[in-house]
Length: 83
Image (cartoon, rainbow, N blue to C red):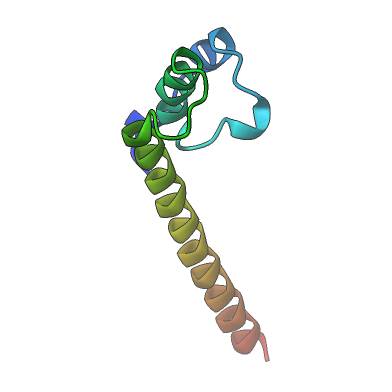
């Protein structure tokens, strides 16, 4: 994930983003939340921001899944080498 999608701690604190949402896509969440508040959380508003944020979340999920597969493969190879 690119660093451009990660907001700084100061930005996150200023926007009062909960700790559970401070992830790789936090910089996309800030404008999404601003739009949601401005548009009174109407579901058909802010679709571009929401799509960008959800795409970032999906890409991060896929990246973490691939990392887990690589880690499991490496640990299995290390266990096989020890035997």
